[in-house]
Length: 120
Image (tube, rainbow, N blue to C red; front, side):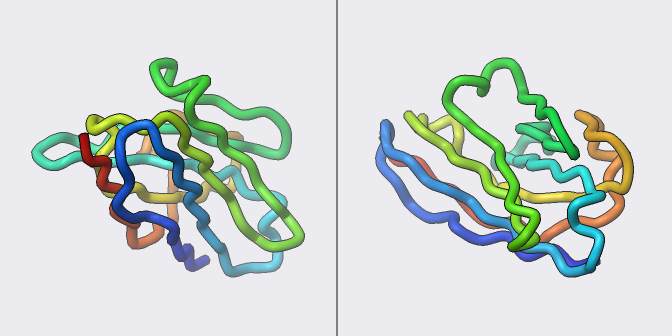
């Protein structure tokens, strides 16, 4: 399975971005998809994940970020609103064959990442 993330860019604080991640494969609807991010000098951290039904978020991001999926388009989205400079990071999408997880080690395929920069 290959994952291709896009949608990153430069945005002012308070703005919004929507990230997309397109996956190859015919069984997309069976995947759990996750978004993770890595800020400069920091470890990669969990952002959000979505399964066949249900989704989870990093608690501090819930309310500003929304994860969704379109199985017909093999795409998972991350809508990010009210962006803050501390949201600046490379955002990665990832896939696993089972239920969603907050643990990056549970995911077996990763996209290349897309850079989000939030200016103050």
